Image (cartoon, rainbow, N blue to C red; front, side):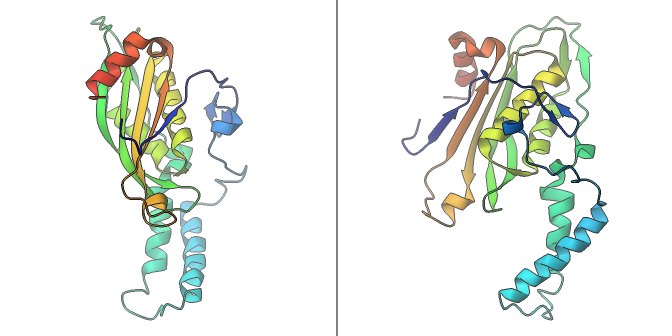
Length: 229
């Protein structure tokens, strides 16, 4: 492991018991903070409101919103926020991770490496860019490989901290796969560290979540071996 990497190893010794707008069994500290009325406005209404507010931000910064290059920016930003980079806030966009019976009785580890991850730091609203690695050991059910990617992307598309993101992905995988034998490891660069503040472009952050059999060194080390760790 590089000296500058931050290892945040979050083991599965927490109770998962609350509800997150239809996402059951996540404790309050692991939920994305949302108001009860978070989804009363339509996407179009949200875009219109955000567009107005962002135009005010640009105006306050002294930018000329009559300029051809800038006049469409408030709408573009608002649409990007609602329809793209923060679309994971809306449970309507939650992927349906349909499981299938494990007819072939596969009982070894399945690893999906290097899943592209784009998220946004909830402290400064700047990008988090990295990759996620997930693994599971099936019992009676499996899921399509693309669903692993979609689960990662769904929880990434919201304002996040990397620790919470790791836990949320692991929890969703356990629920979809109907097994606790799940591992998640995320490696990411935070632009709030790289492009502002300490301006450190050499460090990155690693978080992990191991549950079920992955709490045993044998399985955890096998997973890390596949990742070249």
